[in-house]
Amino acid sequence: SVRHCCEEMTKSSLKNALMVILLVITIACSTKLCKAIESPQYKIVHSESNFEIRHYRESVWMAAPVNEISFEKATRNGFHRLFQFIQGANLNFSRIYMTKPVLTSIVPGAGPLHSSAYFVKFYLPDKFQADPPLPLPELNLQPDPWTSHCIAVRKFSGFARDSNIVKEAEKLALSLSRSPWANTTASTSEYAYSIAQYNSPFRIIGRVNEVWVDVTGSRANGCESNPIAAY
Image (cartoon, rainbow, N blue to C red; front, side, top):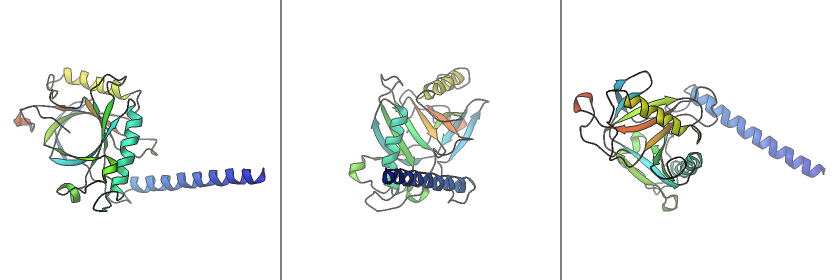
Protein backbone atom coordinates (compact mmCIF):
# COMPACT_ATOMS: atom_id res chain seq x y z
CA SER A 1 0.00 0.00 0.00
CA VAL A 2 0.98 3.65 -0.37
CA ARG A 3 0.95 4.06 3.42
CA HIS A 4 3.26 1.08 3.91
CA CYS A 5 5.58 2.38 1.22
CA CYS A 6 5.76 5.81 2.89
CA GLU A 7 6.47 4.24 6.30
CA GLU A 8 9.35 2.20 4.82
CA MET A 9 10.75 5.31 3.12
CA THR A 10 10.55 7.22 6.42
CA LYS A 11 12.39 4.44 8.28
CA SER A 12 15.03 4.33 5.59
CA SER A 13 15.47 8.12 5.68
CA LEU A 14 15.82 8.11 9.48
CA LYS A 15 18.38 5.31 9.31
CA ASN A 16 20.37 7.15 6.64
CA ALA A 17 20.21 10.38 8.64
CA LEU A 18 21.50 8.58 11.76
CA MET A 19 24.37 7.07 9.79
CA VAL A 20 25.28 10.52 8.43
CA ILE A 21 25.26 12.01 11.95
CA LEU A 22 27.49 9.21 13.28
CA LEU A 23 29.83 9.63 10.32
CA VAL A 24 30.09 13.38 10.94
CA ILE A 25 30.87 12.76 14.61
CA THR A 26 33.54 10.20 13.67
CA ILE A 27 35.15 12.58 11.16
CA ALA A 28 35.03 15.48 13.63
CA CYS A 29 36.72 13.42 16.32
CA SER A 30 39.38 12.22 13.89
CA THR A 31 40.20 15.85 13.06
CA LYS A 32 40.54 16.70 16.80
CA LEU A 33 37.37 18.78 16.99
CA CYS A 34 36.23 16.57 19.87
CA LYS A 35 37.66 16.81 23.37
CA ALA A 36 41.05 15.11 23.54
CA ILE A 37 40.54 11.40 24.24
CA GLU A 38 42.49 10.14 27.24
CA SER A 39 44.38 6.83 27.36
CA PRO A 40 46.28 5.00 30.12
CA GLN A 41 49.85 6.27 30.39
CA TYR A 42 52.84 4.07 29.68
CA LYS A 43 56.47 4.09 28.58
CA ILE A 44 58.07 1.72 26.08
CA VAL A 45 60.82 -0.37 27.67
CA HIS A 46 61.56 -2.70 24.73
CA SER A 47 60.71 -2.50 21.02
CA GLU A 48 61.02 -4.84 18.04
CA SER A 49 59.55 -4.81 14.54
CA ASN A 50 56.44 -6.79 15.43
CA PHE A 51 55.87 -6.12 19.13
CA GLU A 52 56.84 -3.89 22.05
CA ILE A 53 56.91 -4.04 25.83
CA ARG A 54 55.15 -1.21 27.65
CA HIS A 55 55.28 -0.31 31.31
CA TYR A 56 51.85 0.98 32.35
CA ARG A 57 51.28 3.20 35.36
CA GLU A 58 48.76 2.49 38.10
CA SER A 59 45.23 3.17 36.90
CA VAL A 60 41.58 2.37 37.46
CA TRP A 61 39.23 0.91 34.86
CA MET A 62 35.54 -0.01 34.92
CA ALA A 63 34.92 -3.64 33.94
CA ALA A 64 31.85 -5.44 32.60
CA PRO A 65 31.96 -9.23 33.08
CA VAL A 66 30.32 -11.16 30.22
CA ASN A 67 29.64 -14.89 29.87
CA GLU A 68 29.63 -15.49 26.13
CA ILE A 69 31.37 -17.74 23.60
CA SER A 70 31.77 -15.03 20.93
CA PHE A 71 34.37 -12.29 21.46
CA GLU A 72 32.38 -9.92 19.24
CA LYS A 73 29.09 -10.47 21.07
CA ALA A 74 30.83 -10.18 24.44
CA THR A 75 32.44 -6.88 23.45
CA ARG A 76 29.12 -5.45 22.24
CA ASN A 77 27.30 -6.59 25.38
CA GLY A 78 29.94 -5.25 27.75
CA PHE A 79 30.42 -1.96 25.94
CA HIS A 80 26.65 -1.35 25.85
CA ARG A 81 26.58 -1.50 29.67
CA LEU A 82 29.73 0.63 29.98
CA PHE A 83 28.26 3.20 27.59
CA GLN A 84 25.18 3.52 29.82
CA PHE A 85 27.50 4.02 32.78
CA ILE A 86 29.45 6.88 31.14
CA GLN A 87 26.21 8.48 29.95
CA GLY A 88 25.09 8.93 33.55
CA ALA A 89 23.83 5.52 34.74
CA ASN A 90 25.80 5.82 37.96
CA LEU A 91 24.97 6.87 41.51
CA ASN A 92 26.72 10.23 40.97
CA PHE A 93 24.79 10.95 37.72
CA SER A 94 28.19 11.84 36.27
CA ARG A 95 28.74 12.14 32.52
CA ILE A 96 32.11 10.68 31.62
CA TYR A 97 34.08 11.42 28.47
CA MET A 98 34.94 8.52 26.19
CA THR A 99 38.49 7.16 26.50
CA LYS A 100 40.50 4.64 24.52
CA PRO A 101 41.11 1.82 24.06
CA VAL A 102 38.09 -0.36 24.77
CA LEU A 103 39.71 -3.47 26.20
CA THR A 104 38.28 -6.98 26.08
CA SER A 105 40.15 -9.41 28.33
CA ILE A 106 39.76 -13.11 27.56
CA VAL A 107 39.42 -15.45 30.53
CA PRO A 108 40.98 -18.85 29.77
CA GLY A 109 38.36 -21.51 29.11
CA ALA A 110 37.31 -24.40 26.91
CA GLY A 111 35.32 -22.47 24.30
CA PRO A 112 36.20 -22.34 20.58
CA LEU A 113 38.03 -19.06 21.19
CA HIS A 114 39.73 -20.55 24.26
CA SER A 115 37.17 -18.75 26.41
CA SER A 116 33.57 -18.59 27.52
CA ALA A 117 34.03 -15.52 29.69
CA TYR A 118 35.30 -11.99 29.12
CA PHE A 119 35.78 -8.67 30.87
CA VAL A 120 35.12 -5.58 28.73
CA LYS A 121 36.91 -2.58 30.21
CA PHE A 122 36.76 1.20 30.05
CA TYR A 123 39.68 3.36 31.21
CA LEU A 124 38.44 6.06 33.58
CA PRO A 125 39.58 9.63 32.75
CA ASP A 126 42.04 11.33 35.12
CA LYS A 127 39.17 13.29 36.70
CA PHE A 128 37.64 10.05 38.03
CA GLN A 129 40.74 7.97 38.77
CA ALA A 130 40.83 8.78 42.50
CA ASP A 131 37.09 8.48 43.06
CA PRO A 132 35.29 6.43 40.38
CA PRO A 133 31.51 6.98 40.12
CA LEU A 134 29.55 3.96 41.37
CA PRO A 135 27.64 2.25 38.53
CA LEU A 136 23.96 1.40 38.92
CA PRO A 137 23.73 -2.16 40.32
CA GLU A 138 21.70 -3.49 37.38
CA LEU A 139 24.60 -2.79 35.01
CA ASN A 140 26.75 -5.39 36.81
CA LEU A 141 29.97 -3.37 36.52
CA GLN A 142 32.95 -3.29 38.86
CA PRO A 143 35.99 -1.00 39.31
CA ASP A 144 39.23 -2.67 38.22
CA PRO A 145 42.35 -1.12 39.81
CA TRP A 146 45.66 -1.88 38.06
CA THR A 147 49.07 -1.94 39.67
CA SER A 148 51.95 -0.66 37.54
CA HIS A 149 53.10 -3.52 35.34
CA CYS A 150 54.43 -4.50 31.92
CA ILE A 151 52.46 -5.64 28.89
CA ALA A 152 53.64 -7.13 25.59
CA VAL A 153 51.76 -5.51 22.71
CA ARG A 154 51.24 -6.51 19.07
CA LYS A 155 49.40 -4.14 16.70
CA PHE A 156 47.08 -5.33 13.95
CA SER A 157 44.77 -3.51 11.54
CA GLY A 158 41.21 -4.00 10.34
CA PHE A 159 38.42 -5.15 12.62
CA ALA A 160 38.97 -7.38 15.65
CA ARG A 161 36.84 -10.43 14.92
CA ASP A 162 36.17 -13.90 16.26
CA SER A 163 38.01 -15.12 13.17
CA ASN A 164 41.34 -13.33 13.78
CA ILE A 165 41.97 -12.54 17.47
CA VAL A 166 43.32 -15.99 18.38
CA LYS A 167 45.69 -15.91 15.39
CA GLU A 168 46.98 -12.47 16.41
CA ALA A 169 47.52 -13.64 19.99
CA GLU A 170 49.43 -16.68 18.71
CA LYS A 171 51.65 -14.42 16.57
CA LEU A 172 52.50 -12.35 19.64
CA ALA A 173 53.29 -15.51 21.63
CA LEU A 174 55.61 -16.68 18.83
CA SER A 175 57.39 -13.32 18.70
CA LEU A 176 57.91 -13.37 22.46
CA SER A 177 59.29 -16.91 22.34
CA ARG A 178 62.03 -15.73 19.95
CA SER A 179 62.95 -12.63 21.95
CA PRO A 180 64.72 -11.76 25.22
CA TRP A 181 61.22 -11.78 26.70
CA ALA A 182 60.73 -15.53 26.20
CA ASN A 183 59.20 -17.27 29.23
CA THR A 184 58.19 -13.96 30.83
CA THR A 185 54.42 -14.28 30.43
CA ALA A 186 52.86 -13.58 33.82
CA SER A 187 51.66 -17.02 34.86
CA THR A 188 49.55 -15.59 37.68
CA SER A 189 47.48 -13.38 35.38
CA GLU A 190 43.81 -14.30 35.41
CA TYR A 191 43.50 -13.42 31.70
CA ALA A 192 44.97 -15.29 28.75
CA TYR A 193 45.26 -12.08 26.71
CA SER A 194 43.33 -8.91 25.91
CA ILE A 195 42.26 -7.17 22.72
CA ALA A 196 42.48 -3.36 22.70
CA GLN A 197 40.34 -1.51 20.13
CA TYR A 198 41.02 2.17 19.48
CA ASN A 199 38.52 3.18 16.81
CA SER A 200 34.81 3.80 16.39
CA PRO A 201 33.02 0.91 14.61
CA PHE A 202 32.16 3.40 11.88
CA ARG A 203 35.80 3.91 10.94
CA ILE A 204 36.71 1.61 8.06
CA ILE A 205 40.23 2.68 7.01
CA GLY A 206 43.29 2.99 9.24
CA ARG A 207 41.90 1.01 12.15
CA VAL A 208 44.24 0.15 15.06
CA ASN A 209 43.91 -2.84 17.36
CA GLU A 210 46.36 -4.48 19.74
CA VAL A 211 46.87 -7.81 21.49
CA TRP A 212 48.00 -7.36 25.11
CA VAL A 213 49.68 -10.03 27.22
CA ASP A 214 51.06 -9.51 30.74
CA VAL A 215 54.79 -10.05 31.12
CA THR A 216 57.34 -9.81 33.92
CA GLY A 217 60.90 -8.52 33.84
CA SER A 218 63.62 -6.80 35.82
CA ARG A 219 63.31 -3.49 37.64
CA ALA A 220 66.15 -2.17 35.49
CA ASN A 221 63.94 -1.91 32.43
CA GLY A 222 60.95 -0.54 34.32
CA CYS A 223 59.12 -3.79 35.06
CA GLU A 224 58.53 -5.54 38.32
CA SER A 225 60.63 -8.63 38.96
CA ASN A 226 57.75 -10.54 40.58
CA PRO A 227 54.79 -11.82 38.55
CA ILE A 228 51.75 -9.60 38.92
CA ALA A 229 48.16 -10.30 38.05
CA ALA A 230 47.35 -7.66 35.49
CA TYR A 231 44.13 -6.03 34.64
